[in-house]
Image (cartoon, rainbow, N blue to C red; front, top):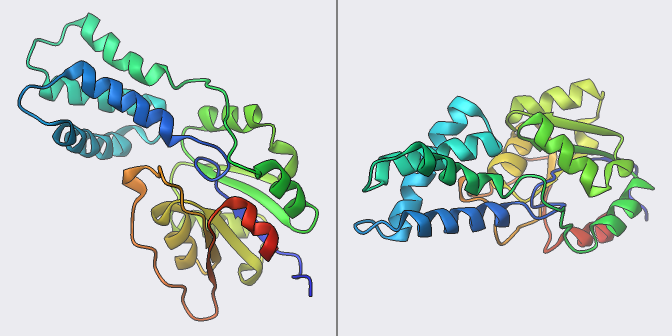
Length: 232
């Protein structure tokens, strides 16, 4: 029996298209460039993770914040004086990510087309407004969505705000994404259903234990985005 019309809030980065792999490549180049003689690559990455958390508080998400995190980490760990030239070179690692071609995950377009014929789709992503909007346009997926929501942070209040804005029924609204921290747990906390689509390269700062669904809510875990066609 077909499922009644639902609303699917769908994450973008690492749910619809690759994203974190580009940051990981930039970080690998940065660690190699730093070439620290006392810290192992893992220790350098640990410092960078801490600095990224600090930069998110100050600058939000996106390439500007990431560039600041690389520069701040380099200043903390560099065994040599940080010249303006070195500073610019370090920030350049973040610049390599900008305006890259969008690499859709397998069967995303076909799955969105299937879902959009049956349900209401709203893309809900977090980050810098201009960056995220640019990725949406370059992806070619805009046509499948009834709305695009780019928020500075995904917490329970953000989900509640979107539900109120679109006058959604929480009992018929699902959040679909790869991040336990930003997609699954806060959506469940806001009274929505959730669908966890794990990604092998989810950003380490998005790692968190997936919480069980409260009574009267549902949590689905699927192996890949295309499996949504089997449920909706």
